[in-house]
Length: 187
Image (tube, rainbow, N blue to C red; front, side):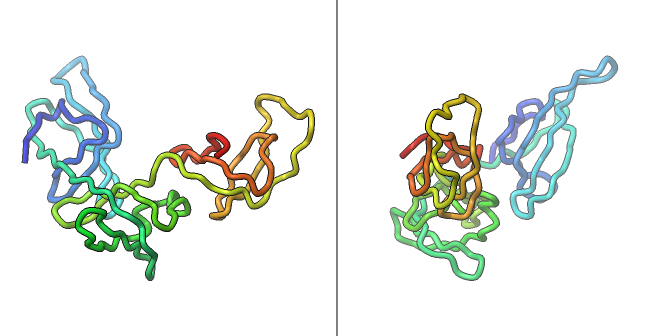
């Protein structure tokens, strides 16, 4: 694995540190008036989710890990485990449902997502940035209500509550941004 200097760490990098795999969440480069410069790095453990703040000087060497990204198709959920199939080899892999966090409701049957692997271990999974959902409950459309910043609450077919513009009605299909959990556009 390639070693990088402490000042080369960037957000999103995966590092092997203290015997575990850590993702760099935030990196601040600090140059104090006295002493050498260092990088203050907030790390998140990819296996258990714990956080750690660590200082790396430019002379410190850390192992940078490359995760292999594979497209996986969602098949079904079984006892808190999500079962995916590799679209090339047709091998099935089980991933804990908590790996998706609050994005879990947006996972739909047959959806292709990206799963990141370290050797044979699945460490991270991401749903597509935009997902089409149906509104099952919202207030009726009011004619003439076209104020730019007025939004109303809506419940989607997956149970998630979001804010939608006033012109969107019940049973309409909309596109939701899964990163910001906000309305994007009509489908």
